[in-house]
Length: 114
Image (cartoon, rainbow, N blue to C red; front, side, top):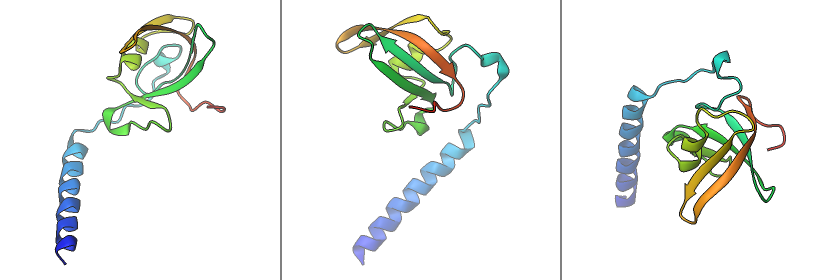
């Protein structure tokens, strides 16, 4: 019985948190002016000098999903990508040092093969 009350308090706490988040959430719609540049919501394909490909989508902090390769707009990779165009070179600061990536593709719909 005690476990049930504890679980109910946890659920209530999470519900209050989510209700507060709903008040400040903002829907960001796609705009044709974004074509060709990386902005919030973009799906981006990048490649490094070794030919390794990576696919990311830039999302808000509440939408991070490592399995889907969704990265927060505050991440070093996303900060380096914002405002860039296809064929641009970006430098990303990582704990291992500076990494260089090249932007192959930018779109605002999911990649078919990613």
